[in-house]
Figure (cartoon, rainbow, N blue to C red):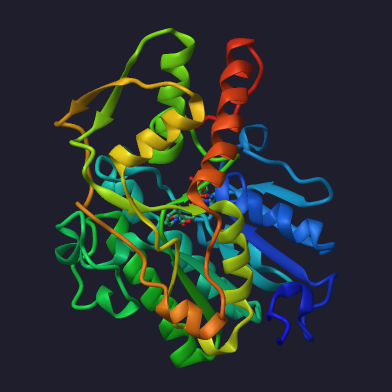
Length: 350
Ligand code: NAD
């Protein structure tokens, strides 16, 4: 079989070419920075607006900068000398965050708009944009058993307010920079990503981390209750972080995918109720469930149709949910213990 087209095998990308990664103080871009560093890339510029001590991961020998990339001048500076740019900076969080802070989500449009122009002017060869399944038409997601979303389902558009529309418009910017100016852009629509070094407390966390934390809290306090947002019938698919990173690399280095939004997610659908059962099993407890029907719910059901990624890349995310969750559970348990002991942890407050 042919070797996958990834940065490490690229005939054109050299190990000392400058790779710029934005949002690197956060979850996914932090893991991506570590990945490229471990692959032997020697010039990585990692950027986030958070002060350096608050970054989730700090990778040694990486140029780590605290800069607000909604400012045009900072984007120009960020792209200087870059060969590849990965834009993962965005104001985002789980349902509780994106339903409440729509303006903050919309304002992320400034980041991609300035960064793309700066990348083009700097002569960058490849540009990656992290879009989201929230860009899909919400009308198609009203049933927990809704059919999986394929790439063409984004139009006619009825994205999630705030966050989803920002993603859709930024995708369009990426597509037009290719069509009009020849900048090679790559767009992945992530479906819920989870893993260690992600937000697990404070308001921006997503369902897998929140549920792990709640189960750990209940166990530690010897309380046998868990509060579940909405009625727990809502369904999603969840992709482990390692699959997400592999997918980003493969998408970015596949010329067949230039300016073509592609699903990057698991296609294994699970309800929130079943996710709770799985985490209970991992934690070795059984809790009484309370349902907060006033809490944010998001769409009723969302899954990733992986036909296109399988056809083009001959690959799809495949880490079993139970395996990935067990790793996250163990990591959050350690974080929880560290916090109790007064040690620093990965949390993000708003
Ligand atoms: P994250 O919140 O952990 O990381 C995003 C980082 O961007 C944060 O550290 C934040 O400080 C930084 N940032 C925000 N505004 C900035 C600015 N103006 N200048 C510089 N940095 C700024 O989120 P994540 O889960 O790592 O998400 C990364 C990307 O993937 C985002 O674009 C997000 O929308 C997308 N995405 C994530 C998921 C998921 O499940 N985690 C799903 C779909 C899409």
